[in-house]
Image (cartoon, rainbow, N blue to C red; front, side, top):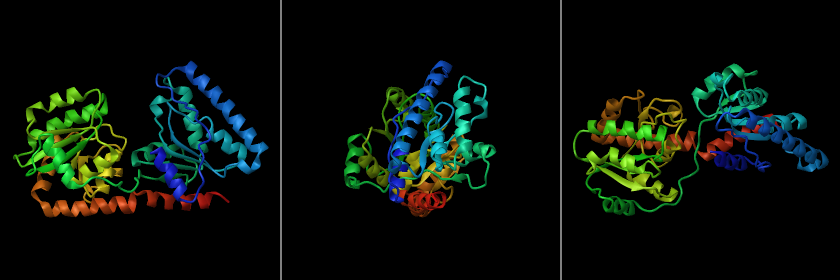
Length: 352
């Protein structure tokens, strides 16, 4: 997402430069580490400010930071923006009050200070926006800026995908459900556990589930789906180009999205005209428009997830309508081009 923001900024007409490689992330909640990171960041910020003052022609017009939260606060951006009197943007900030007095208190306080100081906070989900709202000091400071995606890359043909599926044990005469996810601990594995609860409710033998992904829990995921081996096809890890072709080949993208911040795969699917079936959880409604680019059910309702998918497989007209809706949703509302236009308008307003 950070790379996409760089692309969008450049498409908006801005010249971008990554001026620091500093990383403020503290995984464990170590106060000693947080103090060291703070001191290192302040030293780097002071050095950058001196450089800009000595070479005014290098002074930026705006400072942009991606992803600020209690484990990774921005110690540098607010200091430079204040010293140079320039706008300060944050994209994808998070605010979790429950961390206020926890092991990341220093990071929490720094993140809150940065958020309050920002000219614009581009929040990517409605959920994040609700958490950030109490920190805002002006009505135009908080901007809903949902995730977006670049144009579809060049990719192999549908015939090639059909060959891959058959080589992996699939059949050409079945409708294709698709799931894409890394096979690792945490939310991803939980989603696979929910998906395996969904499969038994998919009546009939006219479908197959294509699974794309790999990782340390791959053997465990394969074991989960072993009872359905004839209708669950593992395609392994795929390149961006190969995955784009698989999205276009499939009929429905299905993923429970347990704990997902939002899930870029939903946009990848929609870009290919592939409707999604998922749960109304966290940021998923920001990347799947219910009734337009897919269908959302209640969190954890595996029966509903299967029922909606089955109904779509049985109603090709509705599925075709959602396919058009998914493609248009991404093109008009979640594309790199649309994001660049929005950024251009905001930057012009803030840079005098």
